[in-house]
Image 1 (cartoon, rainbow, N blue to C red):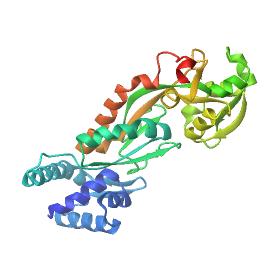
Image 2 (cartoon, rainbow, N blue to C red; image 1 turned 120 degrees about the vertical axis):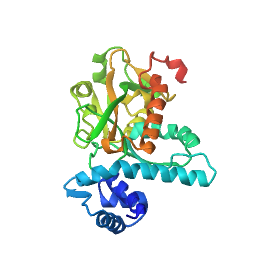
Image 3 (cartoon, rainbow, N blue to C red; image 1 turned 180 degrees about the vertical axis):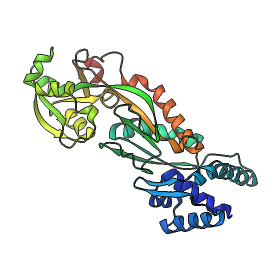
Length: 308
C-alpha cells in the first residue's frame, strides 16, 4: 500500500465528491479517482460506493478511516518536527453563512484566528439561499432556520439575534411621528422580495404583519441594500441589530414594540467532527460569537442624540 494514496482517500471521505476533493487538494478529479482506485487495488477491497448524494464509505472504508486519519496526523507532526517548528493546524476550511453574518461578524473575527493559526485558510461563502446540504458544499455552516436533525450533520445553537425597526434622522424629520405600531401605516418600508428570498425565518407571519401596515416602496433580497436604502431615508427598515444598531446613520424605532427574535445555528457534517482543522475553526467561531452577544440583542435603545 502506498500511504500517499491515503491523502486522496481522506479527501474523498470528507467531501464526498470527486470534484470537491480535487479542488481542496488542488489536483484534477481524475487524479483523485486514480489514486483511490490504486489504494483499493493494493488493499483488495472496495472503499467507496457511488450514491446519488456522492461517494460514501463501504464497511472496508470505515475500517480504514481511523488508521488513515492517524497516519495523516503523525505525518503532519513529523514534518513539523523535522522543520524544528511547533506543530500547527493547517488547511482550508469552507464556511457558508448569511450575507450579514459573514460580513459583519465572521469576517472580522477571522483576523484573530489568523494570528493564532497562520496556516489555516478560510473560504467564506455568503448567501441568502437555503443551506445546501450536498456533500462537500461546506465544512462549517452558520445559518438561520430550524433545529430539525438531518442525518449526517451536527447542529448546535450558536446565538439568538433580533430584527428591529430602524430609520435615518432625515426620514424621521420629514415624516409623521411614530409612537405606536398603528402609526406605521403612514410610513414607507424597505422589505424583502418574498418570492425570491429563500430564508424562511425572515419570511413569517410576524414580519409580514408589520409589512401589511406599511407602504412598501422597495423590495430586495440583499440585506445590505436594505441597510443603505434605510440610511438614505427611503423608508423604515426591519434589520438585524448586529448590522444596524451600531450604525450612527440610523436610530431605533419602536424597539420595545417591534422585536422579532431569531437564531443562528452552526452546522458541521458528522464526518468532519473529529478533524482537528474543522474543530479548531468551529471552536474559534463559537467563542468569538459568544463574546459579541450584546451586538445581537442590544439591552437598551440608544437615544437619538447619540447618533448625531
